[in-house]
Image 1 (tube, rainbow, N blue to C red):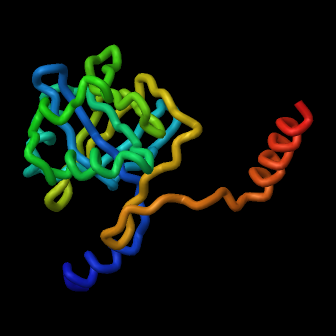
Image 2: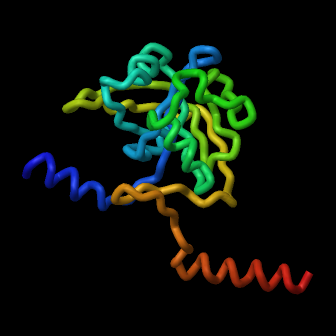
Length: 180
């Protein structure tokens, strides 16, 4: 398969938009990534693919800690900024009003769908990228936030939960709210 055909096929795969970040102020850096997934639960581990030519790659490798912040639908501009589509670089991207830090110092987006603090435990180089495997140290979530997804060059989101259990739970919650 040609690289162009593969790239076109992969554009159709919807993926959550995340900011992977590392470092403490004033040496923070981060990037928008879609190649992120859970790897295991004992111990809790995740993996993200980082292009080795990216500035954030060297910082993650040096710092040995990083965060993964899953973006919500209102974070499109932040996704673009951390994808390099703006005039800000490095620590300038981390607005004090939007970011906290984990105990390790890794940046934590306050209103992310979820944020994970990770300790880098292994790197696996393949092609142009390195798989950064991290043990999850801590995390937080915002259950009300709708995730920002990227598919075929467009920002999208999930429209609704289609599972029967979720629909029953939603009906029960709405009924309880009406009765209260």
